[in-house]
Amino acid sequence: MKKLLIFMLMMLFVLSVSTISFAATDVRISGFGGIDQNIVEELIANFVEPELQDEGITVSYEPVADNYQSVLLNSLSAGTGADLFYMDIFWAQNVISKGLVEPLDGYMKESDMLAKNDIINSLVEGFTYQGKLYGIPKDFNSLALFYNKDLFDVAGVEYPNRDDTWKTLEEKLAAVTAVDDEFIGMALQPEYARMGAFAYANRWDKFDDQGDTDLLDERFQNAFAWYTGLKDKGLGTMPADIGKGWGGGAFATGKVATCIEGAWILGFLRDQAPNLQYGATLLPKSPITDQRGNFIYTVAWGMNKESKNKEEAFRVLELLTSKEAQQWVLERGLAIPSRKSLADNPYFDKDTAEAKANKVVFEGASNGHVKPFSFRDYGGEWMEPVNTALNEVMSGQATLEEALKQAQERLEEDIMN
Image (cartoon, rainbow, N blue to C red; front, top):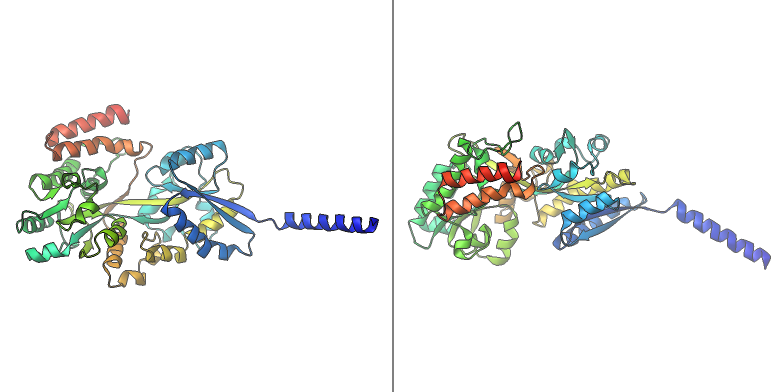
């Protein structure tokens, strides 16, 4: 009996030592809930876990349903944050500047899978702070001009194309709207998130070398006047004026000739307007600079500065952003790859409206004066005065000069002081 007891104790000791020796390192990753949860869990199952089977690393996804930014900041500050987490370009700099995110340059120098020069330059810029890279974009979107082929065919007007300037596009819209009173030239969202791309085309920047904003700059005013002028000339309408909440919704009615959206519109059109014949092209060029402007909308994976599993976390990050994972995301119609090496992707050559539109969005990230959709530490508050000015001018409540003067004062006194 005594020998049996000793044997059992020895076995328990061996098992406990074995468990300790071979315990896997669990890498916690945090991101959005909803649709993103299913996507990330599929990515983990298909592209991460199979590669980590013999490396002693497991992965746990922790989705956050609401107030993601606040939850992330609180958990990182409290020391309970995940090892890897989503960082939206819209507010990433706010988190990075607080010293909560690990710089990734050193890890990438040692990586065989992930090279900084393989990421689209404008995406790298969006997550670079004081010369260091803090996030690896998982995918992205930029803006494109979507057009209703049927309306242009009925009018006998050439489709919008990459050679268009603001002037030639305006002429095409005038020709389309002249055919039928119900035809609308463009869905004009009264938001900097669309109009600002045209200011960039004029080589204007939202912040100068001193960090100030000048909405009274001639380049900004010129773009603002062209965009709002389309409404004044009867060539466009705000989506709300036809009972829609955004440009894609207005476009899906079949009566709007063009809208400015990203690849996010594709799934919506597939479901809500399956018979709509559409195409996509790059945004028109400024007649002043002969260049286009654009925004980059993206989310990156960042690493917790206080993570105890940084090497393992970077290994997971490599797999989440691998060429294979990005190819899968692209073919699912979810977003565009952030890697330059996927520019010649065979998917882009498919003869479908979605594939062609995705290729245009991919090109838009590096064609012209492209800037991240971010506003330093000011966040979305920076846009509010511009959006108000757009609404006031397009609804006839103020002149361009009055609206921009008030917007400049609000920026200086209430937001950037």
